[in-house]
Image (cartoon, rainbow, N blue to C red; front, side, top):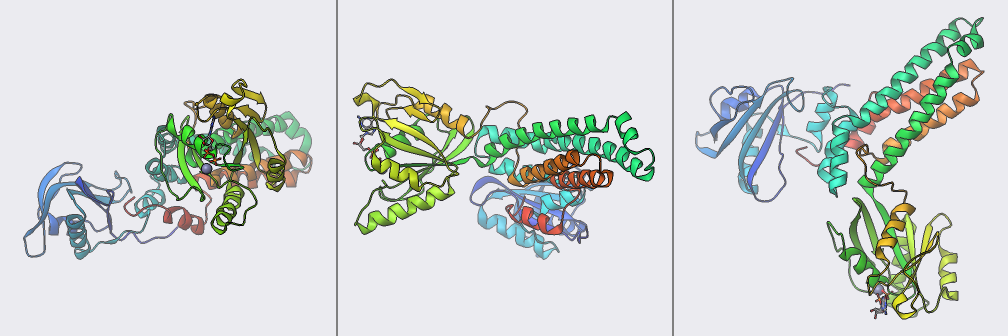
Amino acid sequence: MLYTPDTIAAIATAPGRGGVGVIRVSGKNIQPLIDGLIGKPLKSRFAHFAHFKAADGSTVDEGIALFFPNPASFTGEDVLELQGHGGPVIMNMLLKRCIELGARHAEPGEFTKRAFLNGKLDLAQAEAVADIIDAQSEAAAKSALKSLDGAFSREVHTLVDDLINLRMLVEATLDFPEEDIDFLEAADARGKLHKISAQLARVMDTATQGKLLREGMHVVLIGQPNVGKSSLMNALAGEDVAIVTDIAGTTRDTVRELIQLDGVPLHIIDTAGLRDTDDTVEKIGIERTWAAVEKADLALLLLDSREGITEHDHAILAKLPASLSVLRVFNKIDLTGDAAGDIAEDEIHVSAKQGIGLKELKNKLLKKIGWQGINDGVFIARERHLAAIRVAREHLNTADACYLQIEILAEELRLAQNSLNEITGEFTSDDLLGVIFSRFCIGK
Ligand code: GDP
Ligand code: ZN
């Protein structure tokens, strides 16, 4: 992997005004910046109060300068950090001065990318940096910190080490075909393969939880007009909410809320009531509803307990994608006297207006999306990681099925290992790196 370790600079703190703003500089050629800005040498890892100088000797800003010589820095290169006053104008003046002194503007994620290229972080850890910053709940932030700390990477390395040991056995057999199967049997190669598969299944399980924490789920509320969709949305959003965001418009449009259940972000979309209509505006709302349904992981079909499932509801159900899982929520039980809570596996009684049965509904929701509850072991994960694990599992399954064909066995084990190595970035294309780091913000 080749890259030019030129000197990059960016404002590392969030845009806007704050007490302190930080400019981060990293690269090979920090000295001209120290000379030009500070005018005296900086002690390593020591907070210096300084006046940051303009070319004419006037002061651009005053604040703290920190110098981290390579390799003991975030990027592994020489790093200079300038803590100035956190206003957008003053920060930009200071950044401009750094550019004047030979740095260039950093690209999104470039600091973290350099940390990866210089071996300070592996790829899963680098991704965790972005996930900490983007975390939408405390649970997600904690899990991301665990990944940054290497919890996920260590699991992957253990699996890769076990795979390497197994591959050595198998490849030794390739070299001495006369010993072949007996040799593998004696070394319990198949038992080792099964053990790796079982461990990989456990990692997949944890990673799936980690992905849920990071990305959450899209839940869509559907049903006929007036069954209580908006009321349920408000009731769900009203309690235990860490962050609530309102994105869209009118009652005939789709409205989104982000709610946290047990730390899992749920994007809930309230939709226009689904019915045949000639009203143009309502028609648009209904079209949007179907668009939301297509993107959802789970649908809540709201029903009026007094009516039960009507033929209109059957018509709605018939139009849903077969793959979409549906929870039937019978609302308004305050009017029927039905008991709150579970009716059947996918059916539940609630009253949105009275706030009855909501706890049971939330538990059912979490169960339905596969959430097992937060525990200390959960590290953050992404679809990319899950995809790599899935591919590795397929190769291990093929390896098991073709156990007696040693050349295929060897090849499948090699492919499984490559796939796992992609997670930590030991086997990664430049294209993939581009995709991953370009999604970071500038300054990270
Ligand atoms: P939507 O059209 O499906 O979004 O339904 P709304 O949430 O706007 O509710 C329609 C009407 O039903 C409103 O008057 C609500 O107050 C009422 N409603 C909603 N939930 C309940 C409930 O649990 N019990 C009773 N009695 N009324 C409800
Ligand atoms: Zn509504």
